[in-house]
Length: 253
Image (cartoon, rainbow, N blue to C red; front, side):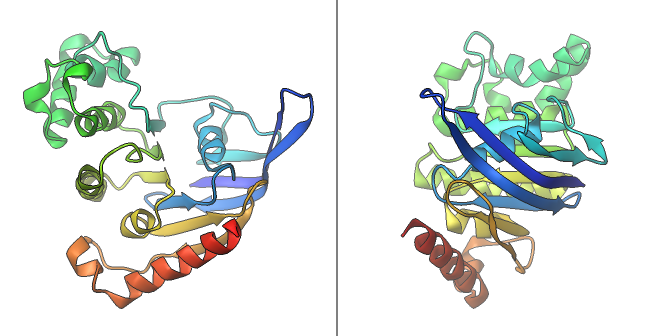
């Protein structure tokens, strides 16, 4: 369970004034849910994710995971960012094994577990390649495998597919769902794409413009496992997209 209670975040600007990024956020996210966060640019979506990860501290309120106050990053929360953040001097295998090695897992065991995850994300044949030798989609697969290899209970994903072409993005969405169906860990997924949020999620949290507050929380009642071709002709799926688009368009206006 992730419990977010009266959370707020204020930043100091370069001019010495204060900017409220988030205001009075209350959320309760049960174990095993896939939750997407939508909202206009600058509404604090990524800031909220970073605070759950322990990379940013709240200005007010609190975040608890399984009843424990979040004050710093921890292995129970695994981040995946848009920029991949792979070490260019390490091979794909070295990158995926890195988190395990940092936790004290011996090299042989760490690399064996890393290979298991590389097989799951279809990169086992590229284990000894370097990031510069991979496509953007392959690099993001490696980044996801690196995080999943140390088995965090919570996956924090900040627009992980935002920099990819449309076809690769759709492919990785489907692959992510396949992995999640096996793991059933909790996912917080920041995105700008309404169709992506509906396709992936159990719930979608819509934030208002800055300062971000919770505008609406929508339960996505669609069958799993999800097949995109079936959803495209599903009236309920279409209604979710129209409703969310209207919320975001109205907020932008």
